[in-house]
Image 1 (cartoon, one colour):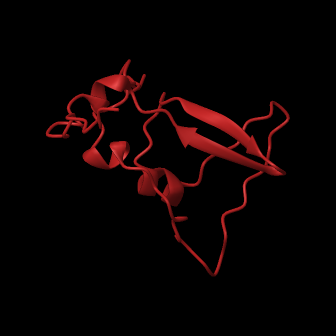
Image 2: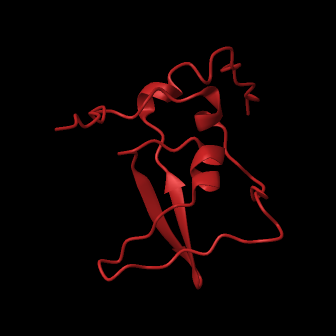
Length: 98
């Protein structure tokens, strides 16, 4: 009998890249775009190169967003990783007296 590896209850700690918004498409393999197939249970497998490029972890939540005729899966970043990302921001406001 072989032992199965246990999957952690929470995704692994994310790097600082998790808090950065990707504004340009990630060009992984321009000569062969990744094509996925929808299973009878409406499941898809995210290709390994995409998972590694986005540092996705098993059990991580993704938000499904429909834009026109396109489906985008956006990783949900836990609020704990956002702590301190505005550190050092200037909160002073210059208001004119009327």
